[in-house]
Image (cartoon, rainbow, N blue to C red; front, side, top):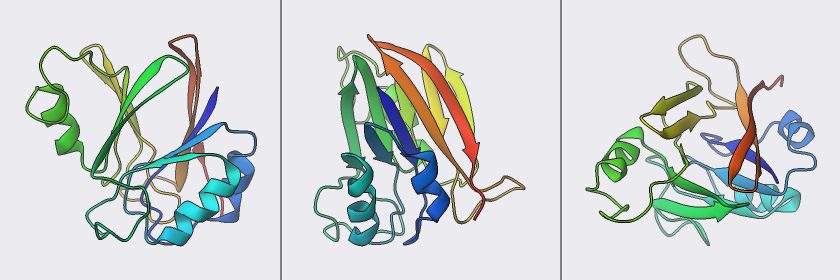
Length: 161
């Protein structure tokens, strides 16, 4: 299963994102969406799991919450816009209750700076932003391949507008 990971679109999806996400089976948007039209556009590509960000307003989106947990191809994902929510969840003071299995991958946005690192046994990724990169990073998204409960590939992809 191939996943398109995006965040911090702030109301606009560059055409290049459609090219990169061609053939993905699911899209995850990690907040600061910028309007329901963004989720509708992504839904043309594949089913979408989305969370709202600090620049979004709760209730403006048909299916976005503050955080989300989804299992795809046996891989458990936790999605939040702010990295602080990921930290809280992994410490057992957020959405992930003590005794619940930890996610395999946590996805966040907010920083507009891409990252792919491990916090203990949990992989934490941020796809950056395809429209407003920060700190010298390039506009970007991620593509993650998962199969039988394992991540087989995770790739940060620069977007050229």
